[in-house]
Length: 309
Ligand code: FAD
Image (cartoon, rainbow, N blue to C red; front, side, top):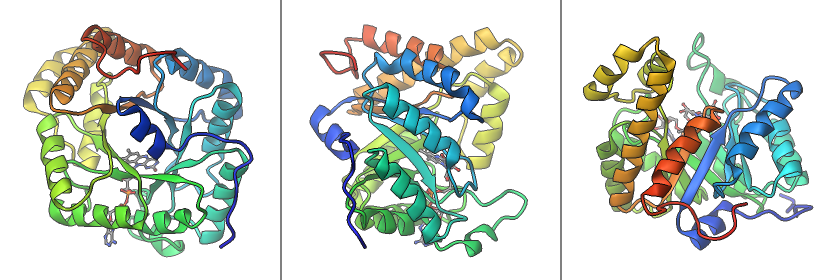
C-alpha cells in the first residue's frame, strides 16, 4: 500500500496523551446539513478554552460516505488549532469506500481516527456486515494503520459490548484491536465507576496497556438516556434512576442533577488515578462548561496549565 504524507501537520493523539498526561477530550455530533456549520462551530468554540486534548466528531450509523463528519472535521481544521478525530465505522463499507474517506482525511491533514465497526441496522440485524469487506473494528484498524499516518483509537465497553457473550471475550477482542495497531481506547458511557475500575484492571491483566479514556455522559434527558442505556446494556444505578424520575419533565432540574452526578463521577475517577476524561458533549457546551468549572474548583485536576488553545 502506498504511504501518504499529510499536507499539513496536526498532532497525533498518541503523542498528545503521552506528552500531556492529563486533560479532557470532547465529542460532538455533526449537523445534519452544511447550513448547520455556524451553530456547530459555536459549540466547539465555546469549549475550546478548556484546551481539549482532542475533539472527536461522530459518524452516522451505516454511513459509507461519512459526508457530515467530513464537513465538520474540515470546519474544525479550518477555524481552530484543535486536534480533530473523526469516528469511522466500517460495517457497510468496502475497502474502496474506506480508502476514499481516509484519503479525504489525509488531504485535510487529519492524523487521528476512531476505528469502529458500527451497529447493524436495527431492522435488519446481522445482514449489514455481509455487504462490506470488514467484519469488525479490528479489520478497520489493520486496514487504516497501513497508511502510516493515523493514530488510531478504538471503543471499549466497561460492562461488555451488547453482543458479547462475556466480558472476558470482549476484552480478548479488544486486545486483538490493540495488537492490530490501536493507540488508545475510549470507553462507552457508564454511571457506576466500579465497572470502569474492574474493566481497567482486567484489561491490564490481559496485557492491554494503551490509555483507556472513560466516557462521561451527563444525564440531561432521562428518557433518551434510559433508551440508549437499554440498547447498549449499560446499567443505570437504582439510586440515579430514583433521583432522575421526579425531573422527567423538568429539564432545568434534570440538567442540574446530571451535572452534579458527572462532577461526582469525575472526582471519584480522579481519586482513583484517572487523568484523562472523554466527554460526550451531546452538543450542549453549557453543560460541559458547568462540569469543567466545578472540577477546576477542585484544584484544577484535568486542565493543562498554560495557554488555552
Ligand atoms: P468491534 O470491536 O468490532 O466489536 C463488535 C462486537 O464484535 C463486540 O461484541 C465484540 O466483542 C465482537 N468482536 C470484536 N472482534 C471480534 C472478532 N475478531 N471475532 C468475533 N467477534 C468480535 N457508532 C456509530 O455508528 N457512530 C459513532 O460515531 C460511534 N461512536 C462511538 C464512540 C464510542 C466511544 C463508543 C464506545 C461507541 C461508538 N459507536 C458509534 C457505537 C459502536 O459503533 C457500536 O458499539 C458497535 O456495535 C461496535 O463497534 P466496535 O467498534 O466496538 O466493534
